[in-house]
Image 1 (cartoon, rainbow, N blue to C red):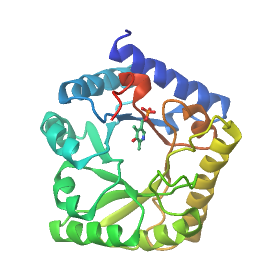
Image 2 (image 1 turned 135 degrees about the horizontal axis):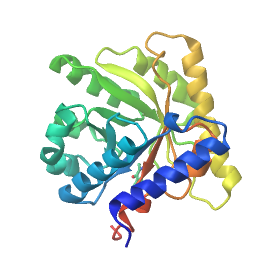
Image 3 (image 1 turned 180 degrees about the vertical axis):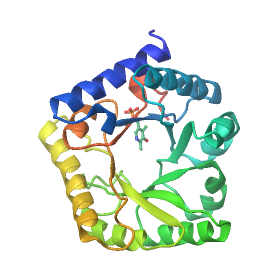
Image 4 (image 1 turned 90 degrees about the horizontal axis):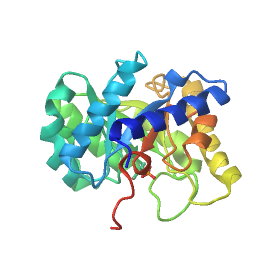
Length: 248
Ligand SMILES: *Cc1c(COP(=O)(O)O)cnc(C)c1O
């Protein structure tokens, strides 16, 4: 089994190659470590590996970590607290969020990528205002329409994002999606293109708070090249770095 460092480097090379093939600057594509089911020690090891790989290419930005469940966020948060405080790590919630978990989640995250409905946005915003903070959020869009996936319907996503952008306590930084679960690459790509079009529409609207909504969080271990070709700025990778997860 190659080391974590070698696997992070291999993924980083895939991202760089995909960016170059698409005529994009590889530095515009960031890697997010999708750490669900990994224990805190493994997460920390992966963060250190990613920090090294980044440093070797002259990138001293924070390492991005994404968790899917509030319970795991809370359990692993202590291992990352110092790095988060130092600005070396950002922790993003990338899984479905229930309203009754917002208070537990907030102290452990720097960003929330799964705002998919107005009631959730309002509830998170209210608590951020109460806490005197501004949370980076993305609107999650279900571009494939698969019922198993979270995300707002694409037809209403731009309007939702515009309303979210105007809320105090939140900063809309972009959009997130999970690619269609199909071997048909054209279908996967068209979903990613749809997310880009929604992003472009919202940014071009000039509506209050939409000016920072540039991120496109899309692509995972198996479809990251397609996502980068369609403009991904954050790619969320688990399996290609940590190996197969045990079935849940
Ligand atoms: C697990 C997960 C990933 C990573 O998927 P892999 O196929 O393991 O790379 C990315 N995004 C989300 C939302 C996930 O839940």
